[in-house]
Length: 346
Image 1 (cartoon, rainbow, N blue to C red):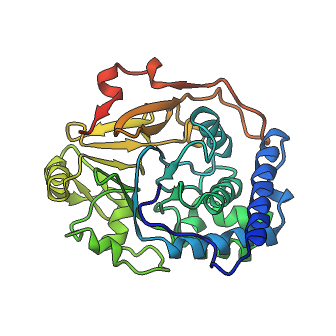
Image 2: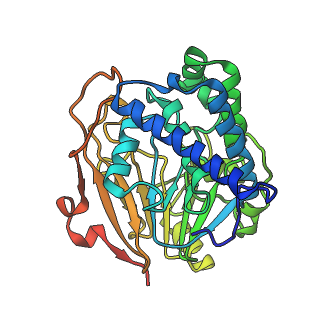
């Protein structure tokens, strides 16, 4: 799926060693899924195992570009925020790797109760299927935000501060944007006044934390805004908002047809902007057990025809662990009319 061939193996591993390593990753994936069914948490994974996942993922991220170039088909997911059960619902509805290719747009941790499980499973899938499973960085893949919004405390309470630092070292190396089939630009937040050409993204250095301003900050923090035509200050106090004219100009300059981003809760799980030239995807239904929002996954087929899979809200229940959860998802055939569900790009 990746347009640039990269492999996790150094080439020095024997085929037997590589097979054993893949088998170990399959075991970890199975353990994490079993925990969800059996009301157990990632405490069943040793700290050493999770640390290995972080360190190996870090090296893999560094071996792949800062701006990924991918091919279709692919399924694109937005914010998860530690909602592990809902991540499993996405896989149940949309297909487990490697049966489906995935691109996640960031914000895997904070706010939810199971950030460790969520990020551990995603990283393990990345290691297991490095050419068909991709993770972008979100603004919450940040040490500063983790200290405020819960992931630091979760790691400290359940494992150690040292493990949290291993996670931070890992996502300090994540890519920040992706292009699908030369037509779809994907990013967590949005555009930047400092983005003059795509090489500006490719030249961003890693490892790096998230700065308070500049290109990297904007890619992770900026938002579309219907009330402005160009650039304006952001009510978040970080980065900018951008209007439809900025979206149209960016697409025209780079010959793209669509921008896909995350970063904002939207009631239906997805929301169009700028005459359907940009779409926001949010994949955490019942966000924070406060909102009654749906989650959504954007499915891009091999011909670049797009449709949405809707993850319906669950009845509210205070989280006490995990249980099997099926039958509560629906495709967009039960949602808005077809004109809002599909967009043929060319």
